[in-house]
Image (cartoon, rainbow, N blue to C red; front, side):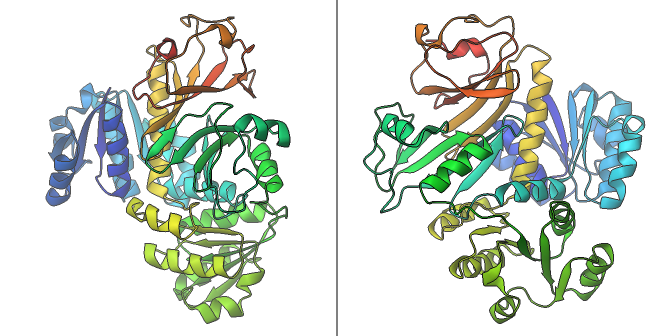
Length: 452
């Protein structure tokens, strides 16, 4: 698919990288020549230098031939104008990155007039992800997929775990759990397991299931405590905090925000009178202690500095706060977070890129692809795919045990009438179902490709 992206910042690059990996024909429009040159050296894309809100630049980028234009600059107004002009020039679909809360409600009213197919708000998306992730602890890495119906979590098997030495079939019968062990990392080895696979100390295990089933399982094996989240402390008062506070208050939680910019503090107090807002430096450990950090049920670090977020999150975790979430923009810090036990970090640019790529896949569905959603895990070595069962599927009504699937893959769940069920030998797929598959084979794009 031919796609144009306006803006080559953190979000624009993350989107371009993911779409390029999936084989799309990507053109980036950027007005900083050095940034554009760096991206062209790193990705197999076309670069056009200039302002994405300039008609001549859009013509040079041949947006009239594009199925989709994504405007992802740091300026909402430029994004809106780029989409309007691209639509007039013949682009079939447009997506605008809109961050300002004051624009959101107005854009919903004017979406058609502006020619927008979709608007994306990275800060709002990050806030929703934080609320979802707060249900797990800091040492459980969590990702949602299949339109939020399923969760994919990753844990490290540490000394003393009741799972050590147990086969997956033994674990299943012992805990009566419907969660599914779908990938095991053992050193440099990546294993798609079966019922006879035995869990060893040091394994990194990916499990999938519904939020509630995973919570219940982690509580049973003593990784997660069973208590309700009531008090949350947030360090940093930017846009993500604005959306996050609004969501937490709706859930009836008590919120405390620490922010060093006085004007931001006053704005938060005016918008959210019931929130405790502290004017101070959130990296000051004494201040955090004096505000009873150790008594909090959750802690979220949302400053603009990755290192600060990691350090104060470590401090919160050492004080015994179970749910700790740092915002980290640099993916390269992932190895450090893992060593520190802070796997469940938030990366807004990746959340946005995933949402846009899901939209692109949905567009492809209209031209014959079966993929509903796709996420890559374990450094892109494994794909988690959701296929829609359409009338071109060759095994409708056939029990899974009678089918021969390719090696290095696992049929995980069949979603029938909106309800995911663990795939078993007697399970049959019906027209309209969706099938969730874990695969080490890259590039599966049709449901019939899963057969040997």
